[in-house]
Amino acid sequence: MRIALVNNNNNILFSIARHLRDRGHDVTLCLMDYEYYEAPHFHPSCDTFDLEYQSYTRVLEWGLGKAFSTYDFKKVRADLDRYDYVIGTGSTPAFLAKIGRPLDMFIPWGADLWESPFNFPPFNRRSVRSLFEFPFWQRQGVKDCKVVLSDVSPIVEPALDRLKWKGHRIVGQAPMPYGPLYKPGNLVQFEDRCAWFHVVRELRARTDVLVHAPARHVWKSTLNYNWTKGTDKIIRGVAEAKKRAKGKRFGLVFYEYGPDVNASRELCAELGLTDDVLWLPLSTRKEVMVNLSVCDFSIGEVGETSWITGGTILEALAMAKPLLTRRDDELYVDSYDSLYPRVQVRVAEDIRKALVAFSEDPAPFKEMGEGGRAWFDQQVETKSLNALEAQLPRPRSSTK
Image (tube, rainbow, N blue to C red; front, side, top):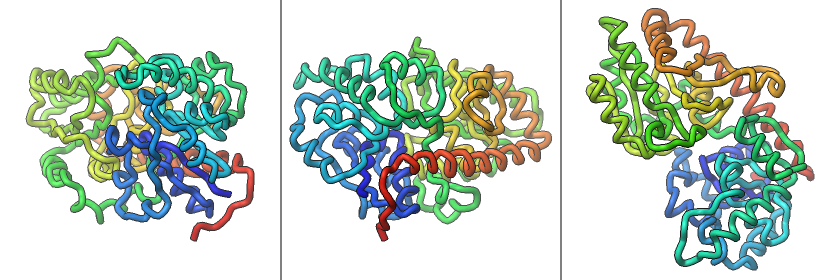
């Protein structure tokens, strides 16, 4: 059976492709056209240190929602007819609906589920029709898809209900970081292959507690509470830890990513953190993971919405790092048999307390990180992948 994994937003399907190949499946990763020129950090080369992906990856000549109406859908059909089973994310549901083929499995990355089916895409003067056609077909495609693999979320559930989706739900986590590569002790060999690791190493050498915060800077410019990342809480928490823990040196690794980078820089300067914060350019996942490997903490989601997983959360769990994140457990107790250990963060004071406590006694936090990796192995790379594989309708065939 030939399986197509279409779209690689957030590097989700490249990780799944590797796992399915490890299990003996015939898999092709199909990148959409825009992933080369609008989102190059979602190219497979950004998430691996070898070129093996080239043997099972192809680039499609379609995929952009705002250009939806300009594509040749005979070509779309021809591209996908060769596959027995299609797993997709992003705009994949719309393209399959347009050619009359239900998507076999949808693994939403976020806005492809709770925004794209209901809102206009960005304006494209070359294809005004796409403004109307793309959300219509994305709605239809999600409604028709047979299986959805997704976490429980205060955003996902209302979107599926609004679409009146009636398929099979797998409550689980797509393994965004590929665990066999991203694990404690394994990334030392790649440090010299990462452009900015030498400056991370320098900051590591002069700090007692180093915090990694890879999420987009979104906290001042948006009124959409689902998108806010709470970056200001991180900055204020580190600043307060610096004040309270005399003689301890705190460092913070940020990335130039998101609409509020300038506002974050200004707040850092205002609170006296300019020399304690390292600003790195937008980086690939493999570089982010190598940087994370030498940090003491990682920050997940500390905005105004509770998330059980996401890229920043799973990256921390994979690398066995103690995680500071907001997770409101009452939302999940009925859907999960276990939850990973974490430090609950709602306000800056929660971050301050955790950093000061680590500076005094790091052992419990390191144990927390190890427990997070154990949860990642069991719940993400075993349970969720087994549930995904169980939906594949035919016996496996070797690719090697």
